[in-house]
Length: 402
Image 1 (tube, rainbow, N blue to C red):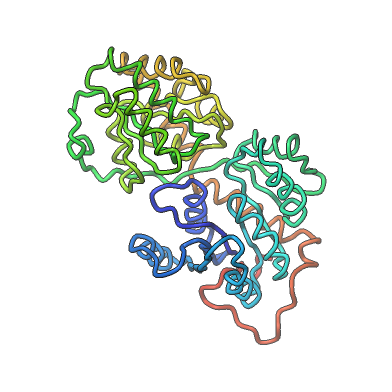
Image 2 (spheres, helix red, strand yellow):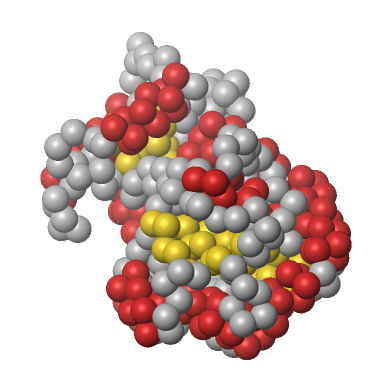
């Protein structure tokens, strides 16, 4: 199978992380996996990208990188189409909107029997072109669409008007590999006192993450919690707005925008409370990471977050876009470390039982097999030329598996 992703997103990006982890955890006796990375850009890959690509290949996952100079650089797709045909690829799995569209177009062009679209986030209410492409192109060309939250699946039907009788819509919750802190002292590195209240948010700086609400909440907390520090790990287009807000509220010593980080497990391990204040979500990997490391969570009732966090059991839930409520939730846990620890431990137990990447991989494998066995997909499979050989690192299912 081939997974189609925008980039490797080493320091963030839930969809890219899921694609990488799935490729590593699909049963190698049944599937050979390739990651097609479409936006590494011209020139040589960055050192970190190159190192990750080598690591993936060392573990049996081939990486095919395309050089695209823009959205309409159609010639850049030729190597992928050639690869799909040459290797007789049986499954093409797109991740997120852009890759879903291209998987629908190129997979159909190359005669791939099974095309899977995977929507890791859904917030298209104000984007009619996206909704149209999802309904007319992606849904009609795909064997199945995976939604990472039940709410997203419902929205595909009710808002995008995708007909579930014609397109299989499957809810498969995200999962993560167990994060492992290095043991390094993040507080010492960032010159934060051991007894300072520390709140961490791991999120791309996108509008729907509503990180301005966290900055506002921090301003409401500083009087009660001297020495408070709020660390935001991630990068994105909202940085200028957040920087202005931090300056206007005179919170430069309190709220720190750390940018993209490679030491996220260390940051989480160092905090007292972990938070996510999005107004729209599916099943965010950041919350799973918080849970995996036993940290108490204060998050919003948005999208699939309540599917992960039961209020008062694994953490605290507040309404989106409410800085006062977010501040109150964080304050409750900072005031009561014992309760915070109990919530964190219950969250850790739940994550390990229900939200592991291995469980997700087994569900995806089952879906692939069901789709490959479907009569409609068998009719689409191209006839193999006599004597054609599979590459030992090809991206096709192994013999006997469809």
